[in-house]
Length: 496
Image (cartoon, rainbow, N blue to C red; front, side, top):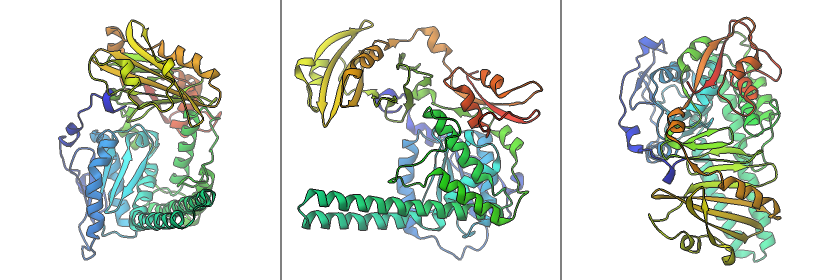
């Protein structure tokens, strides 16, 4: 969690060491020089056929947006072995891509989210969370090839043009048609059109990416495996059955996982390649020790607890809640529709907490509900509100010279909200020195499956967390009830 909760100094991510990852050392394609500029970044520079020119508008967009993206995702992730794992694939993919003359800059972002995306101009981004989920080099190559396909197909430009046209059309309808119902129908139609347009682009990038993957000599079925692992990880995170591949909303910009899996498998089969390179052991050896989950400066999620060692506090959410530590706030939800947000409050040191609640930022505030309370000896104030069909409960707590706030919301009946609100804020407390010293970042630790090892036993060796067995299988490409094979390498999530 960034903002007032974070002790991160983002400038330090621009001052890392630089180095060179040479083609000869990595066995990459001879037509591409692969070097490292800023730490956490791999740059592929073509050494031949430079007659083609990249549109300077593309480069301008990428250079403008790059610093914003790096800052939003917690900076770059600096790990030499992880950089090598990525660098090994870039040169081969560029040489096999539809535009082998194009240069790329691949940045590893310090985010636990499983994510990858691309900007015009050849800027590609992958998160350390994605690298921790992948099980071999070919799966990483599949992701990067997909993002390169977005670049070569000019998808970012096409989406921007389509969105601009849609905005003009929407404004025209709103200017001419006075009926709000008609306006909503027109807007919904535009949103569906834009979403499907993006879905088609995703499927096209899958197709081109898998073709590039196979031309580079990698296993074309890697995309199928990685998409499956993503679905299983999402199922673990959302409390769903572990082989629930899920469906996306019809307004989502990404196709549903089953749709992508079906196409990816068909494209892979069409290549006729059944012995493409995977490099599982080599890849796992390079990501052994990669950080998993939250960066220490953002605080830790441990089961139902959020703990911030540097700022010195923690709290616990009730049973049934899933916590997500985002860059802006700690979020939690349960199956009954209760949502929680925890973040920093902009209150001057010593400022009046009641005045803060009454300062106008809470819509529908019930003035009679505002009162001061003490939470584990800490000064606090609480209030209730109702707005737009939602019931809210708010608490602001002073901790040292900082102030933090809890916001709870539910649509409709607020009867379930009061108990959850009270039980959660009552857990906010200062951490002891021992608790702070014992907190350590989670890491991926690679071990070899020994005779007698089972998925259940290996999962118990991981740090304590909800549904650890489901996470173990998702991280290691195992289906429900599938056991790891003796002699193979698997990933564990540990804190020591």
